[in-house]
View (tube, rainbow, N blue to C red):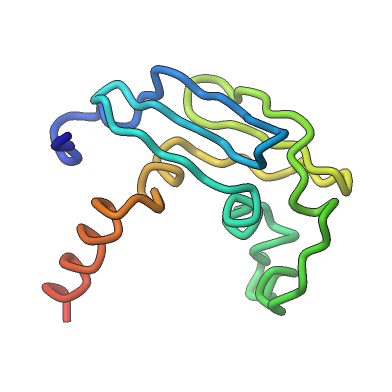
Length: 125
């Protein structure tokens, strides 16, 4: 299926979000028909919170390339944050990261979006 990634903002609107805890996956179906599937390890590495990413010029915890434990990648719950993000809760109690729909779509791990990002990076060089 062809994705109209740049037309309007409809590509940022999820039509369906499913947290498959048993399989360790977060599945998002976007309004334009695109499908995004994150495994929970990749999703935890994307955590945008100040603790994980750092703030005020200081590196975050994830910048130290830690070895993630099973509890740190066990998805316990997912809450919607308004109409722009989700907030996962993890098995280790971490729950402060707001993953915007823009971030989740921009980092989609599917082959189509990986190829788009590689092509874009080659043009920018």
